Image 1 (cartoon, helix red, strand yellow):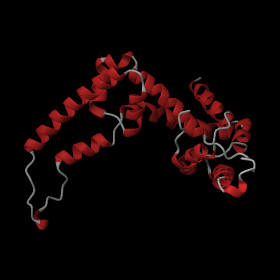
Image 2: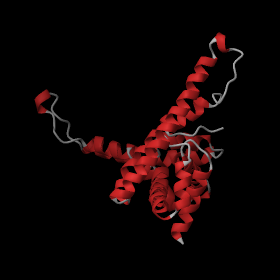
Image 3: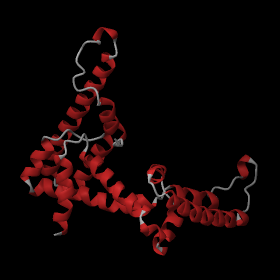
Image 4: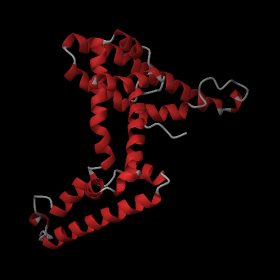
Length: 240
């Protein structure tokens, strides 16, 4: 039953004719996570404790700020900043400064730096969506092995962004045997490179269309080529 629940969003994404089905799945997960974060849950002690500790990555704090609930953003930022400032001040007060001389510097990183690096590597929203996305990737390979119809969908899809192409390329060796992996890579490489060349060709025509000599020429498929190229290269779907 659980496997079937995960096949629904995977199938929907591959049916969408998006430039990268994994980008579409990621976007939907992000929207759901932002709605959860900005909903009544942000007042619950357990969630506030997590947001205070983890904070948010730049991408997701921008998405939160775009939400109507500005008070919720302010409350989370306020308590997160209080906690960060308090704990960093304690670490800074206890930290013994390294010698200013070049050869007298401490080899180990300061607790202050370690704290900041850990903070910068965490995000409440990312931690909500990453396990589900990993399950989606697992489901893609499960369906590749078991579902001939899904194989056909993948063969006919518009490809993937470079980032998710890399994930599928890497994870295939983990989930598939040698024969299956070779077959998978053959399809993966074809749809990825065909998709990239198609979109890049549309971008090239978009550029050429701005030449006065092509003023009366048809736009062909180039009008939305920039948005599609951003998906391919930046693994980001722009909000409409």
